Length: 422
Image (tube, rainbow, N blue to C red; front, top):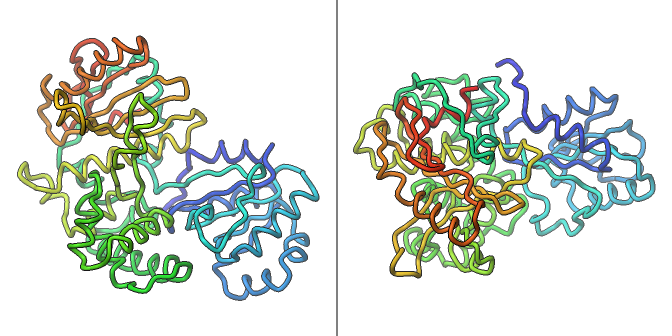
């Protein structure tokens, strides 16, 4: 497939002007190598891959001597495979010479959470997450819709020409660059091999995993519960392992970026740590493959997995766009567990800006949305208006129908493709 421009690239280029080290991490096969190599070579630098056994051995013989003999910026691919030895060498070199833009590191694991790496490069590194391709990147469009939401002025988009099945086709395809051009049968084989590679090469190579066969099973279980709060006790019972094993393995699936969590949101900051997070698979295509479902089956109104997969698809699109933005906004979910007057109320996505402004998003698989679908958004609007006037910027119901509609004060119904329609 032809090279697709990544929206995060300008942010990375800008960071190289002031930060000594830039880290690009994310799941395998998201395009980190291509992006890092391009940026380094454009700036007259060099590239080395620690995924290559010979290159890795050469670096590890004397990391400081090897790294200091290269032209900069030096892109070091899969840096976690060099362990603490390579990271400490990078730290030494950038402390001796504080010139910005010296190293571009990539990693298929979150090196901040890998047990064998104790050095975080704090104060020296700017970290970016590269997700699979967003729908906006595939469309070649610079997205602005989320900014419009925060400005309180979601733009009226033209009627969508995508059907319900079209949305599920996009969800099942996912965003891994290698997958985009494959047919469904080829895609299934690619995902099968992908899961095996990540488990064998990343998790087992770095972790003390004694029941490796449980990892793919846990990932499939997580796919069945994507967009839900994970019950670790239930998972342990279902898979026949200890709860502590489930907790450890879920952390590793996040470390290699196959899962990501949405913390629970509340204006009471302390409560964010007391409610369970929602878990999403990082790519809806991977989730669909693990569940062995296709767009045709999901398009049926009675398909049990359709709502959860569509929610993961839309949440991931928003997360991918925010990861490439210079504006700091954090994703949460909200669900009331305690107050019996509000029990059962939940909102799929709460996006919060640094200044406390909030946009609330509901995602529905329906192609015929109604005002009733915005009841929880309306409740949150009124609650925040009473306690923090001006904080609630917009409530958005994303749906699979064609129309853009208003549902009252700051409440809007939008087709999902408003996120990339331009």
